Length: 260
Image (tube, rainbow, N blue to C red):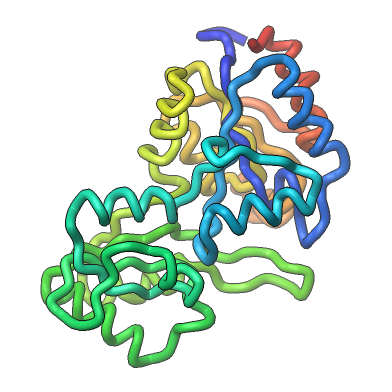
C-alpha cells in the first residue's frame, strides 16, 4: 500500500457490523481491536428514521458500545444545518424524527424540504406538500438517497425513491446530507482531525460507502456481507481498494497496511 498511513476507520453499520437483525460474526471483536490499537473510529450510517441516541441503544443490543461522538448520521448533519440557517422546514420524515428535529414549520412559507425515511407518515397529500414547497422555492434536502434496504422479511424501497419523485416533479436537484455525499465523509474525517487520505472507509455498499469514500479521497474496503452479493450480480463491485469476506478480517488487513 502506498500513500499516507491509515490513522482512522470510517465504518458502516448495517450490512457491515450487523445484517438482518443479527450481528456479523467477529464484528464486536473487530471494533474492540481497532480501539485497542488506537485507530481513530467513526461509525457512519445512513439510517434516517430515528435519532442518534436510539441508534446507540440498538448498537448496545448487538454488544457494540458507541460513544456519542463516534456516531455520524445524516440526521445530526441536518439538525446542525437547519438550525444554522434559521430554517422553516417542511418535514417528509418519520414521526420519531418530527419530535426531535428543530426548525419544523406547520405552514408555509418553507425555506427547506427535508426528506428521510417516511414510511409511517407518507401519503399523497404529504408528497404533494413537499413538491409544492420545492416548486415555490424551498431547498430540497435528502437525508440519504439509498435505492433499497434489506430486512428479515425482504427488500424495501429506500428514501432515494421518494427524493427522486419530488426532484423529478419539481425540477430541483436535492442536496444529499448522508452517504455518498463527499461532505459526509470529509466531515467525519475532520471530526477525528485526520485527513481523508489517512482514512479507510469500510462498508458493504458499493454505491454509498465505496463510491462516497473514493470521491472523498479515502481508501476503501468492501465487505462481502449485506448488499455485496446483490451488487456483485449487478456488476457494481470491484471498485474498492480491497475486499474482505467480513469486517472480522479488518484488523488483520490494517496490521498488514501498518495502520496506527
